[in-house]
Image (cartoon, rainbow, N blue to C red; front, side):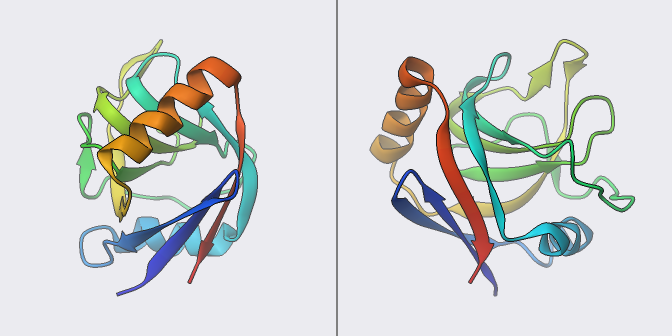
Length: 138
């Protein structure tokens, strides 16, 4: 199984790719990785953070292994069906949504971070703003 590495402001986490559950989503991500961007607090979805990838050209990505209610650490790729494209990093209770309503993102990986680490990440982005993030396959 492949893994992603998330370097968030110098803190490094790994995420196991769900290649059997979301193969086309993962293939689409491999085309734009490594990604250097900003991790921001969500506006609509609860306790989560996100990376805007709206400027990245993605192939047609089907709904696969999709969810509106991801668990803490479930990495979602949202290819922009009804809203801007993004990578969602849930840190706690999350209902993935936007002004357009609930969104279903493709669950592509599971982040190996503790509940406390994710809580602190979410609180840091809420209180202090965006953090540098690099996502790469390892």
